[in-house]
Length: 309
Image (cartoon, rainbow, N blue to C red):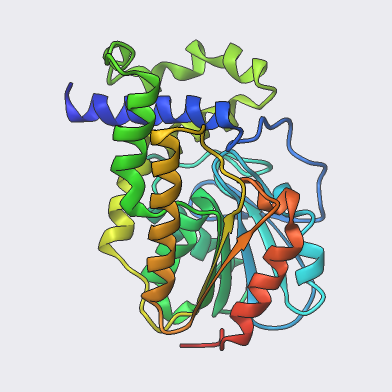
């Protein structure tokens, strides 16, 4: 299979499994307007909503398929001590759709523009859930002088990309390879007409469905961007991982869990100031099941010296 078709199939099939496992919640219409504002970041508008006072500014980025409302249990607590901002990535919530490809490098650049045009001064303490962790790590790699610290909430590691999707997910869902052979390079461009019924069935706006597909299909490209642009070792990092297994029991699932744990521990060890913790009662959606642990982790990273580097 040509590389571009292989990558597209990987993204679409991984999306199927992530939905099946509950790693991506089934989302509905955007939450009610939360006194945020829409800011032009270069031809499209992004929604941002901030609460509280105190520096550094804390910025929260949701996972694949998520939106700013995912942080409703976290933002008010963090806002008691720090200016805390939630936002909708392009294509989610109240934000416009954005240009392709939806890789972490593009997303990080859009986030930086958003923060600066919102007159929020750096450095920032950035927290990301799941795929949002890719984005905030790349922000730290691209803009280290504007990063006070990073918190990763059950975020995968770029080293997992091939094993997770090629050996794990694709092998698990499509052992004979027949499903992968169905996808054509033109599939994404035809999705607005072809898949509107799927978005409606899942209870989500069409723009959200297309954004999920585009971010998922660009997952390995984002992983390559991360590998090429590591965070400086002096940026404080906190990692919070799920305590309940999110993959089916068995050789594949157990191996994916071990790889995820090992990769994230190694990521913390690579930093001069790092902290690792597990949310014992949570699956992938820690912000829903144990949001207080995210608040604790952010404050831990702030205590580790999360100021200008």
